[in-house]
Image 1: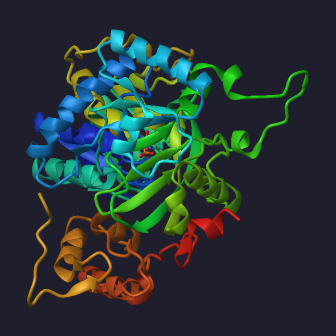
Image 2: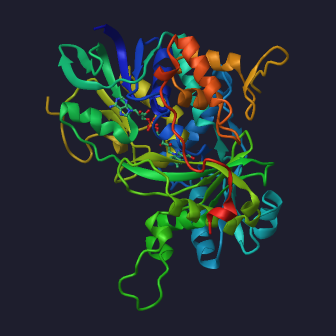
Length: 402
Length: 92
Ligand SMILES: Cc1cc2nc3c(=O)[nH]c(=O)nc-3n(C[C@H](O)[C@H](O)[C@H](O)COP(=O)(O)OP(=O)(O)OC[C@H]3O[C@@H](n4cnc5c(N)ncnc54)[C@H](O)[C@@H]3O)c2cc1C
């Protein structure tokens, strides 16, 4: 048995655990980062690469995404290895007049909030995306939408933190957590023990496996997304692409589900059953990622032919040229989803020094720099630059039963 | 900033993604212990052949660096498709 001592023990080496570890190590804290599997085994190793501002409703998450984007600019040079951060802009394809008017309203509200995004007509869209399907009538465009390679980001955070003394332990998990007079004691499944002043639970969709050890539950559930990876091809266009359908269904669920008049119990189409939305981005290496679905299937990470067929048909619908392209891989990841779409960032009620930073759903990569910053502030007793009320771990009730 | 790609006497392990033996050994020194981790860290095995030509070589380097027997290396998983498939073929 080995006993480790540190200032902060972080559970979960996804993008958020790594970002928090990096920020705390930079501030001189002695950190141990523990993952049940390995770095990137969760959502952060199985996701898209977008830092997307446009999809967000005006509010604190959009403000935090703005701040994160600034932080990425700094990280790009501060981190020791390349993270493939790029700003290519983003376009959300609009298929019909009805969606156009909804998107016009949405874009106007984002503009009032300071996000530079506009509606462009088909002519301008074709300049950005020459191969887009002929019946796409318009698009949004935001010049600031960016992307980053999540795996390289985690690796850069980890190596940066290691340089400042971080210890990374993979393939182990706590089986019991005890409160000490000052701090916490983790009993690991290897028999080793970790004593830390502060604990941070950054276990994404699995966060409850850890909070339950102190009898606390947060309503985080896994939401599966399936993705196709194509062979490397020359760039099709300039921007990253989504379809308005997904945004519309978030804003106005009744508009998105088009049923014929008088139909009383609309049956779900396969696309609805899989929560299909279109996200299409080209990676640094020339592979395209074709996503994705939003499914509640527990912790099952398998990909299935029906979803892959839907994703294939969808990309052909928006970019007919893609029918000729080969795909080389498929994968699925589990987004940590919460009932109100807000992550849990803060101290667990009744468990002083036990923090949680999980539940970023589809924005965890984009929000990882700001998550690292606010969590490091909370852990070191500094006031974060954002109000944290909306992220309270106890907002759905519950108190640790220590 | 592009990753330095050694030339000349450097040996490519993954030809699809041009990953050298040195890069793989470096990943293991930084903490990688399985083929999956090496793949995520270096992109070895992520290319068009999906690791069919380099997986064995990566396993051998892992065994060497970690002083393990080949059968002690963690097994790697495969996701469909095992060979490239066209988008068109998939949607039928
Ligand atoms: C298909 C798809 C596409 C996406 N696209 C984007 C995108 O374009 N942009 C974006 O910003 N976000 C995107 N996301 C969301 C993003 O991937 C997540 O929000 C983010 O990765 C969450 O990171 P995390 O560090 O909180 O959790 P995770 O990455 O899930 O990490 C949690 C870690 O905790 C570990 N763990 C689990 N249980 C334990 C335990 N008991 N003890 C110790 N460790 C444990 C796991 O092994 C894992 O490594 C996408 C997600 C999916 C699935």
